[in-house]
Length: 395
Image (cartoon, rainbow, N blue to C red; front, side, top):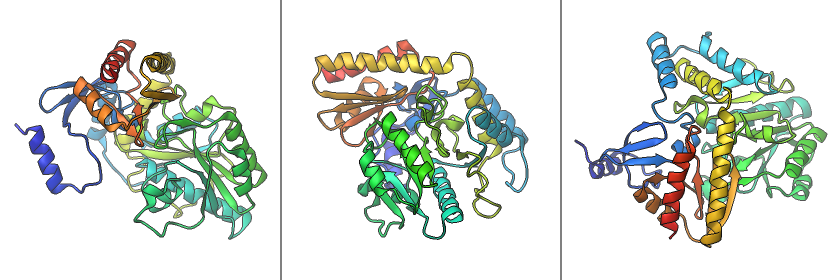
């Protein structure tokens, strides 16, 4: 039997060092629980960074994957298959969008949104209408375009020169937005809740101002829903908490319950900007991933599911605020639904390691915030387990 230490040693030997991994090796999962190679049972409050939306080994999800894999794993997007069409229909009919495009990840989804905006701008405002405004402390991906869109220079360092045509706005600062908006802007891009930026929600006033600025300048409003979407905040998409309708959203992470999938949704204003040959993805809309995604979306839309997301996440947030009164190391509690961040007065890594030792796995956001983003099926009893372990660590 391979031990955890052997796995770590072989990973260090054969895998590029692109992650600051925590010293824990998982073997399997069931529901909201993960099991390590040495037999420990750990509560998953990370969900693969907001990916495992229906938890681990979900029977309906497994059945859909197995059934589709036995029929057809892959065929070119030059042809039609039922699962990706069904998925597009589900998403369009439950939002205000008109059409979908599918790819494999959040970075790819944001890349598609950027390309769509650039082409839309040039088509409607000429060759100079290509500038995109994004937010400081945002995160949009690791490709050269999306790392440029990311408003944090630490992710860009070493990869310069970054892509031209981007400018950065102070998040939730309407004056800064309006000062940087002009006729050459083709899009404003933002997250409803900044994930890597510390779990900071957009204000209703700023969101509305971004919509108005785009309308006044014939620009697209792009919302990055890679982490906030697919039921994570208690709505199908987080923008639905606000009285604002974006032109484009990107999505990924939880959409296929753990299989690689991403995509964008676009309104009738811009969805036909792409024509054959403008953009593509070999594996986008893959039949197996799309079949899994159909199960995820149908489950989210079933009676009471999203209400349970709201109820359990609010219970968690209220309970942590009660702990804040006892433990001043908790500086703030932020977020929406099951995208919650606890900001500490100390660095987070030692606390995260102690939580792992106590039987709870979470993930960081920056140096001082701990993210709690469990599978959306989590129950109140399982939340209580996490709260008990958190308090024990804080003591």
